[in-house]
Amino acid sequence: MLYKNYPMTLQVEDPANCWGLTPDRYDKLGKYYSTCIKDKGRLVFDCNVVACHEKGFGGLPAEKPSGEEIRQIVYNMSLSGTRPAFYSEEAFFPGDFKNISMVLARKTKITKTDNHSCKIISPYSVTINTGIKDSQIFLDDKEWHATNQGNVIIPVGEHFLSVRSKKRNENDFCMKSISGDLLVADFTGDSIDFFIQRIV
Image 1 (spheres, rainbow, N blue to C red):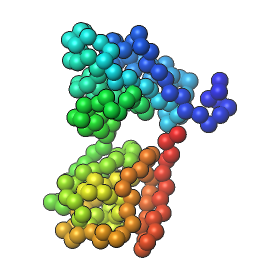
Image 2 (cartoon, rainbow, N blue to C red):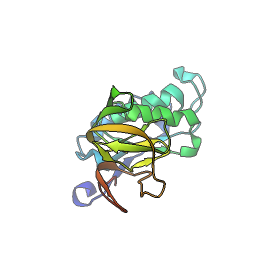
Image 3 (cartoon, rainbow, N blue to C red):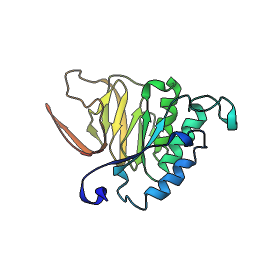
Image 4 (cartoon, rainbow, N blue to C red):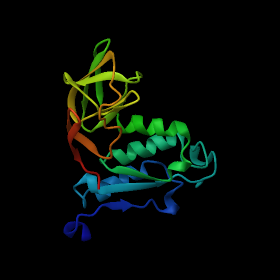
């Protein structure tokens, strides 16, 4: 098998003749392929967000995956720790991106410690929306610049996030987004040192 000899990622296509089936088909795919590919970072499942079934048929709410159906698809994909891929992003209804984000981040625990801080425990890197733009952000009592317009990138593990009323210096370097899991970052002067778990 090529997977055993090369650093490759396998993306499993959801065949067209299965598009009308229920979302739990991805759980079945996950159980099957997980026996072959142990590194879940190297396994991706595909979902075609296209008009593939008659509206109302089989209890499905729309002609293309949306709403609760897309939530269930992502949930069933993630049961085996598998990453999702979608064709295509343009086909999504705007609210479905939020639905997907909430499903994928469901193992994250956020505990409020006071009015301006909270404890976050997550097995993967997550982005937290503080609802407050351009404020000073501290993570584990150190100034934190992995932030953009109130969205804060939190590394894997347990951390304490606090938002200060003082405005952030707009000239500071910052990490606005990331592809992969952020493991650790250090912001010193005009430099950023960070480590990520690469998504291949």
